[in-house]
Length: 184
Image (tube, rainbow, N blue to C red; front, side, top):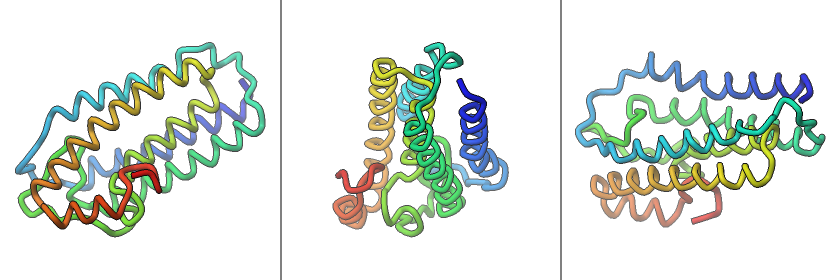
C-alpha cells in the first residue's frame, strides 16, 4: 500500500475519533434516567464490521486514485460530523442508548439533516477505510455486520425517543432520515 494511503488512514481515524475522546472527558453527562443496554449488541456488530475491513493483506494493496479520492471525501465528511454532532448534543451525548431526565429532542446542527449523524460519521469512516484496504467480497461481509449493528442501535434509540417525545419525535422521524440522507 502506498504511504499516502497509510497517512490518510491514520490521520482520518485520529481526527474522526478525537472529538469522541474529548467528549468522554469534557461532556459530563448526567446519569441517564432511561438506558437500553441492548444497543451494545449493535456496538459489537459494528466493531465486528470494522474489524473485518482489515482482514485482507491490505499492506500489499495498491489503491487506485478514484478510490483514494473517495476515501478522502468520506473521511472528511465523517470528521466534520464527528466534531459537529457531539458538540450539538452537548451533555445529552453518551455511549449507551439512554435519555436524561431533562433530555430535549435535538433538531439543530447536523440533526437537521439526519436523526443520527454520529452513525452517519461512522458509516463514512467505514466506507473511507474499506475503499483503501478491503477487497469487495470482504467489504460486503463487513458492511452487512456494520449495517445490522447500526440498525439495531438506531431502532432502539428511536424507540426511546418516541417513548419520551411521542408525536414530536414521530413528526421529526417522518421529516428527517435516520443516518443516510434522503433514505427514510
